[in-house]
Image 1: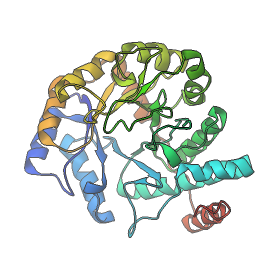
Image 2 (image 1 turned 90 degrees about the horizontal axis):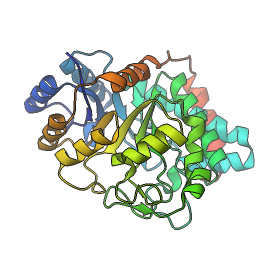
Image 3 (image 1 turned 30 degrees about the vertical axis):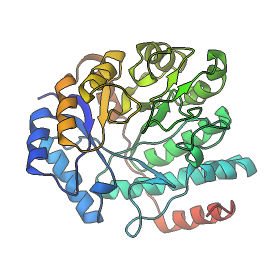
Length: 340
């Protein structure tokens, strides 16, 4: 039975009976975990296995945002603290190879943590290029303020994840760095000219265009589409994401329940699908909203199905890792920045 074109969160540490019935009936393509879903390693592994068993798909993708820094769903006491992206950028400024090695190591270790639990996708890397005066929603999550540097580090992050058998999700395409508002709460509008966007924000994503999956930005770029954010803009998806940037992988929305988007959850879902996103992401675990999303998403078919299958098929077998040695090396590199 085909999956539907959405990824869903769930409410707690285990599935409720109602959630189990919903998942069986609506068959989301994948799942995403948050701190509310995390207690112990054994509990997370059970939840991941239960999610897959409920859709009867051993390879159903399970996603998490495990960046390090302030965006880290798995943390102490069971999982280590990882550095934010700005640490890699600081090292890169001293010696590019040190910055790339730290990015690779940190994400290879993150990948090992996730693989232990059965989680198969990390919503990384970021290619957002922040500017002075932007909202701090990106802040020290970013790798730097120059597109080439950001792309270099993002590729190293990707390598670390892939070496550990974890699929990456590029975000927030085509760029959240200039936003002067947090799209969790309201819709940001960027009035920068197209030529400048192409030189900076969009340029950081071009070297990453071959990644298997990407997540959109809930940001209006008025020079391209003054009415719709990238997530619901057919113009930006076709001309910028698929065109200028050249990304041809699976395109998922950022969270459909974020306040940047207007209308009901059902209306937002229709707009996301209608604009050309392959997959709708719903994160908050509210069952009534989950039902609205499911009611408006099609079964995976055509190009979306091809992209989803290609993304999953690109997952690599984990390479051997000496975790202790890798952690010692990473900690030594981070110490050099004074940001530990």
